[in-house]
Length: 423
Image 1: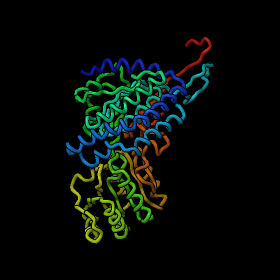
Image 2 (image 1 turned 30 degrees about the horizontal axis):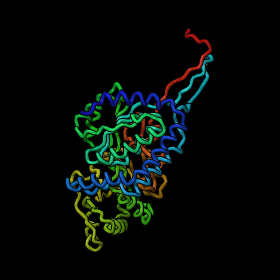
Image 3 (image 1 turned 90 degrees about the vertical axis):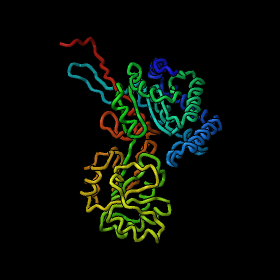
Image 4 (image 1 turned 30 degrees about the vertical axis):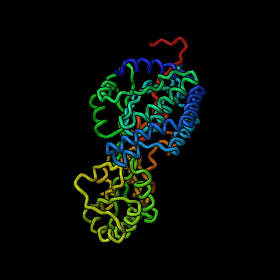
């Protein structure tokens, strides 16, 4: 039986050692992990192949299997991303502000590690490396709990991490994994507030709701994206097709993939056939409301497109697959109102050459990332230059958007006096 208290005690002890490590030692650990990933590639791929085989036997969706899959290219990317994190500036110890008080005391705010992170995630073994590298760079320890469908892959990756840590004389308990798939252990982890300082769930609505309702530890929620693009009447339509394609197809199983396309009626008759043709080529099924459906239906046979009438819940759905909702809106005001009614505040984008409309769209929407003339796929720690991310936060406290290095720190006040006493 997995003893989470033992894991918690070990993680807390490791976090105290990590918190005072110089940057060079942390970078040494990260580079050792990158090397070990490459050395153990065949072992990792073999374990992942077993997870994939089990997933297919259990009837997992293609989208979920894609999230689960590791390939030589993805393994190489994990090693490369780990080295990128090592090359990033270390936020720990930096001063956010410093000032001299009227009484002569110098006061500053200094970044420090959070402590121990508890991260619960599903299906994506690359998250194991992302969390480990960002945690180590910021002096945090981590207790990880992945989904049962990725157990072998994650255990192989954690073994890689712990082996590398031991090679550079750092505690293996800096990154630990709950290897028992019993779901009761998730609830137990959520109550481990004596040792764990923050819970980060990466999964569906049910997981986020469970964490928010049952955790006695602060929870950072996010990663559920119902993402929108609005094609304004002034948009460059050829570029708009490219952006929609990239947003939807480049990797449809991730949280920043496009779910709903909103189109201005003045360009719908020209744009929708162009878009439908491209989506048909990429195997995307369109779910359209009445006016959009009427325009798309006449082109569906010609372009071999799959066009269905949208159902009542289709615009409140994170598809994570090759399905795209399509709806016509009268103007930018209606686009904003529609998004506000259906968004999870993850990612939105407007395609326009009207600067006033772009400004209105950006100012009105409070999603974690709002883009102008760009793909929703850019809402990502790597794309933002953060190296990697542990999650994309859609809440408004502590962190917002991709959670990179700075978001895995908190701060303390440091005061330097000279015999000061309070009057």
